[in-house]
Length: 154
Image (cartoon, rainbow, N blue to C red; front, side, top):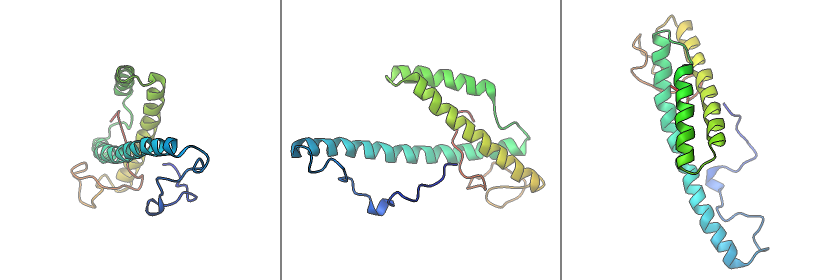
Protein backbone atom coordinates (compact mmCIF):
# COMPACT_ATOMS: atom_id res chain seq x y z
CA UNK A 1 0.00 0.00 0.00
CA UNK A 2 0.99 3.59 -0.35
CA UNK A 3 3.14 5.05 2.39
CA UNK A 4 1.48 7.66 4.56
CA UNK A 5 2.60 11.22 4.01
CA UNK A 6 3.41 12.37 7.53
CA UNK A 7 3.92 15.97 6.34
CA UNK A 8 0.19 16.39 5.74
CA UNK A 9 -2.01 17.76 8.51
CA UNK A 10 -4.42 15.34 10.11
CA UNK A 11 -8.12 15.68 9.37
CA UNK A 12 -8.78 17.43 12.69
CA UNK A 13 -6.59 20.35 11.64
CA UNK A 14 -7.81 20.49 8.03
CA UNK A 15 -8.75 24.01 6.99
CA UNK A 16 -11.00 23.96 3.90
CA UNK A 17 -10.28 27.67 3.38
CA UNK A 18 -6.51 27.15 3.28
CA UNK A 19 -5.13 28.51 0.04
CA UNK A 20 -1.99 30.19 -1.16
CA UNK A 21 -4.32 32.39 -3.22
CA UNK A 22 -5.98 34.02 -0.19
CA UNK A 23 -5.39 37.75 -0.23
CA UNK A 24 -4.22 37.67 -3.86
CA UNK A 25 -7.55 37.35 -5.66
CA UNK A 26 -10.85 39.17 -5.55
CA UNK A 27 -12.88 38.05 -2.49
CA UNK A 28 -15.87 37.06 -4.65
CA UNK A 29 -13.62 34.86 -6.80
CA UNK A 30 -12.14 33.33 -3.65
CA UNK A 31 -15.63 32.63 -2.26
CA UNK A 32 -16.66 30.89 -5.48
CA UNK A 33 -13.41 28.91 -5.53
CA UNK A 34 -13.94 27.77 -1.92
CA UNK A 35 -17.53 26.78 -2.69
CA UNK A 36 -16.44 24.60 -5.60
CA UNK A 37 -13.62 23.14 -3.53
CA UNK A 38 -16.12 22.24 -0.82
CA UNK A 39 -17.92 20.04 -3.36
CA UNK A 40 -14.60 18.49 -4.37
CA UNK A 41 -13.83 17.77 -0.71
CA UNK A 42 -17.19 16.02 -0.33
CA UNK A 43 -16.56 13.95 -3.44
CA UNK A 44 -13.07 12.99 -2.21
CA UNK A 45 -14.50 11.88 1.14
CA UNK A 46 -17.15 9.83 -0.65
CA UNK A 47 -14.50 8.18 -2.81
CA UNK A 48 -12.53 7.16 0.29
CA UNK A 49 -15.60 5.59 1.88
CA UNK A 50 -16.59 3.86 -1.37
CA UNK A 51 -13.11 2.42 -1.71
CA UNK A 52 -13.23 1.24 1.90
CA UNK A 53 -16.46 -0.65 1.15
CA UNK A 54 -14.89 -2.10 -1.98
CA UNK A 55 -11.86 -3.16 0.13
CA UNK A 56 -14.13 -5.03 2.54
CA UNK A 57 -15.77 -6.97 -0.29
CA UNK A 58 -12.56 -7.85 -2.08
CA UNK A 59 -10.99 -8.97 1.18
CA UNK A 60 -13.73 -11.61 1.32
CA UNK A 61 -12.86 -12.58 -2.24
CA UNK A 62 -9.20 -12.95 -1.25
CA UNK A 63 -10.06 -15.29 1.61
CA UNK A 64 -12.42 -17.31 -0.58
CA UNK A 65 -9.74 -17.64 -3.26
CA UNK A 66 -7.15 -18.66 -0.66
CA UNK A 67 -9.46 -21.25 0.89
CA UNK A 68 -10.05 -22.85 -2.51
CA UNK A 69 -6.51 -22.34 -3.80
CA UNK A 70 -7.69 -20.12 -6.64
CA UNK A 71 -5.23 -17.78 -8.35
CA UNK A 72 -5.03 -14.21 -7.06
CA UNK A 73 -5.62 -12.76 -10.52
CA UNK A 74 -8.30 -13.52 -13.08
CA UNK A 75 -7.07 -12.16 -16.45
CA UNK A 76 -10.37 -12.85 -18.22
CA UNK A 77 -12.35 -10.84 -15.67
CA UNK A 78 -9.72 -8.11 -15.58
CA UNK A 79 -9.88 -7.69 -19.37
CA UNK A 80 -13.68 -7.60 -19.31
CA UNK A 81 -13.71 -5.08 -16.46
CA UNK A 82 -11.24 -2.79 -18.20
CA UNK A 83 -13.38 -2.80 -21.36
CA UNK A 84 -16.54 -2.22 -19.28
CA UNK A 85 -15.04 0.68 -17.31
CA UNK A 86 -13.63 2.27 -20.46
CA UNK A 87 -17.19 2.30 -21.88
CA UNK A 88 -18.56 3.70 -18.62
CA UNK A 89 -15.85 6.37 -18.62
CA UNK A 90 -16.77 7.39 -22.16
CA UNK A 91 -20.45 7.61 -21.19
CA UNK A 92 -19.51 9.73 -18.16
CA UNK A 93 -17.23 11.95 -20.28
CA UNK A 94 -14.17 10.80 -18.34
CA UNK A 95 -10.94 10.04 -20.17
CA UNK A 96 -11.06 6.26 -20.78
CA UNK A 97 -7.25 6.06 -20.67
CA UNK A 98 -7.33 7.58 -17.17
CA UNK A 99 -10.04 5.13 -16.08
CA UNK A 100 -7.94 2.24 -17.40
CA UNK A 101 -4.80 3.44 -15.59
CA UNK A 102 -6.79 3.77 -12.37
CA UNK A 103 -8.28 0.30 -12.76
CA UNK A 104 -4.91 -1.25 -13.58
CA UNK A 105 -3.47 0.29 -10.40
CA UNK A 106 -6.31 -1.18 -8.35
CA UNK A 107 -6.00 -4.59 -10.03
CA UNK A 108 -2.29 -4.65 -9.24
CA UNK A 109 -2.97 -3.85 -5.58
CA UNK A 110 -5.73 -6.44 -5.38
CA UNK A 111 -3.53 -9.17 -6.80
CA UNK A 112 -0.73 -8.23 -4.40
CA UNK A 113 -3.11 -8.34 -1.45
CA UNK A 114 -4.74 -11.59 -2.55
CA UNK A 115 -1.29 -13.17 -2.86
CA UNK A 116 -0.47 -12.04 0.69
CA UNK A 117 -3.78 -13.43 1.97
CA UNK A 118 -3.00 -16.76 0.26
CA UNK A 119 0.48 -16.82 1.81
CA UNK A 120 -0.98 -16.16 5.27
CA UNK A 121 -3.62 -18.82 4.67
CA UNK A 122 -1.04 -21.40 3.59
CA UNK A 123 1.31 -20.53 6.45
CA UNK A 124 -1.55 -21.12 8.90
CA UNK A 125 -2.13 -24.57 7.45
CA UNK A 126 -5.14 -23.49 5.43
CA UNK A 127 -7.13 -22.50 8.51
CA UNK A 128 -6.41 -18.77 8.59
CA UNK A 129 -9.42 -16.48 8.76
CA UNK A 130 -9.35 -12.73 9.21
CA UNK A 131 -11.46 -13.01 12.36
CA UNK A 132 -9.16 -15.63 13.89
CA UNK A 133 -11.69 -18.42 13.38
CA UNK A 134 -11.39 -21.89 11.85
CA UNK A 135 -11.31 -23.29 8.33
CA UNK A 136 -14.33 -21.47 6.93
CA UNK A 137 -12.33 -18.82 5.12
CA UNK A 138 -14.29 -16.06 3.51
CA UNK A 139 -17.17 -16.32 5.95
CA UNK A 140 -16.10 -13.11 7.61
CA UNK A 141 -13.75 -10.40 6.50
CA UNK A 142 -11.59 -8.06 8.45
CA UNK A 143 -8.16 -6.54 8.13
CA UNK A 144 -5.37 -8.85 7.05
CA UNK A 145 -1.66 -8.45 7.35
CA UNK A 146 -1.74 -7.26 3.75
CA UNK A 147 -4.22 -4.51 4.52
CA UNK A 148 -7.48 -3.87 2.75
CA UNK A 149 -7.85 -4.80 -0.86
CA UNK A 150 -9.81 -2.90 -3.48
CA UNK A 151 -10.91 -4.69 -6.57
CA UNK A 152 -12.90 -4.17 -9.67
CA UNK A 153 -11.52 -7.51 -10.81
CA UNK A 154 -12.21 -9.78 -7.85
